[in-house]
Length: 630
Image (cartoon, rainbow, N blue to C red; front, side, top):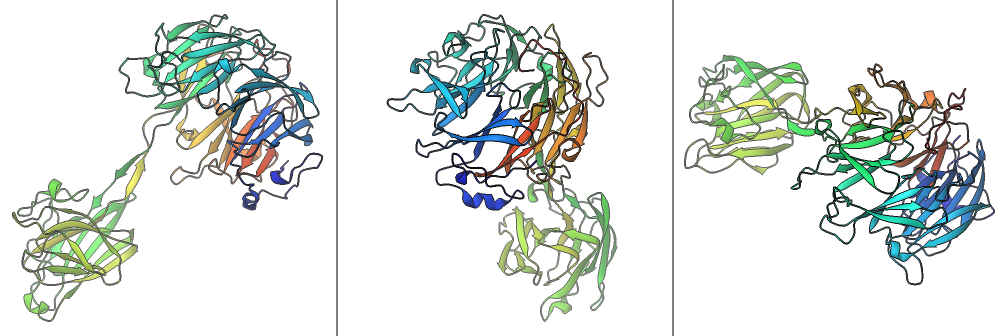
């Protein structure tokens, strides 16, 4: 089911204005002061149907109601409310069952204190769009611009606790990370969290990520401290597992360094992927592809010299384009200084003369018959056996310090890519473009690029006793980094069973975000990959579903740990396939209460879609983990 709603028209007591399909025109209805939508999915009323909270992220509008609440009655049926209780002006909302009654509550935190208002409060849903709100003391110091909140049940009592991670520096001894253990009545027992007894705050958000999960299956949430970067004077481990003792303290275990878990190398995406009630994680590589110039210059193999006026010389050779050999034929003023088989040419010093240019002396040398140039320039031509895009010419010793030589490419756009030291000591005049597509040299070296796709390049050049050129390509390509994503299955001892994930999954963090939940109701977490369309030459769908094939036994064959599925194979509506994450956001939850993770996809500032998982027999009805959220 698809629901696209123009939120500014949503007023109390009315229904949504539904569009027949998602449309970019939704953005034309953006209200003043609102930015992109934030969507939270949670079971606020305890009926097993997850409800939807929609609010404009970082809204700067007035304190009037601008948070929308959709309470689910099951498949495609909602009660819709505007609420003043969840004011979203400069606030961040966090979901958790803070009183342990089986219904999700909402922690609201403001960016900056407002005179006469509390910094934070917890709202408990009472039905019909109304909440009961308990203000938290400002002394908690958890305002949204100074802390990050990470929720979990760290003492195993069924009530949501949280860690307040400061945005300070490691030397901020007055603002350590703290754990807030819920008492169930809106108050919390608070303890500082120190790293190996260090008084400095090595858990601050500029140094570390905190990833929560029950990593040993004892019913208590633990967390991993993931070091963010490599420049670490304190030799802090890349990842440390904090095993909860149940009283707000933790026992620390360093995770193996050879897992390469540092935060500048990977994201850690948690879930119970094999259904054993122990949290696992995917190490999602965020290694950036490396831009690299891959030059290919002509290997000249045969020359026919020009020996008299009116006769053209010829040179032939090959270079590679996308693993295809392109035959190059040149017709023009070829002289006997042309070189094959990497013979050095006079004074040339290739590494210094050319940047990303030829590195050996394999050239066509030009001079021609002087009488042919008495009335100007003589025609030359390069022919390619296959179309070549943006070919480059490396020119050497063009002109002399007194008399210039010009290459005239007519109407072909030409750019000077680089110039190097002149080929004769003492001469420092670089290549220039005096006008149009004319390249001029006075004892000059350099590389030029012709813009376009060509099978032949005609040009003219005026007479000089001796200068030389060669032709090729030098595209900049993104070279994938050699860093695989891995699956790390947790065990009751805290050890990890690690296996590489197939490269065919294409889940690199630089191109995609992973969203985890049980999508097919079999007791194992699955995930959705949401592409950002940045992947070069990609044929990947914007939304791809990965269903777990893993068994409880960690020694299972992991060659195909997940089944890669198209969105249309798993979800009922396929009309939002074309929206990547640069245009939309995704939030998962069981909106119709059938045990399968549906998702809400928000678009811009005014539109969202609700997409339901396909129905079928649920295999997860008997699963009982110690953790209520599994």
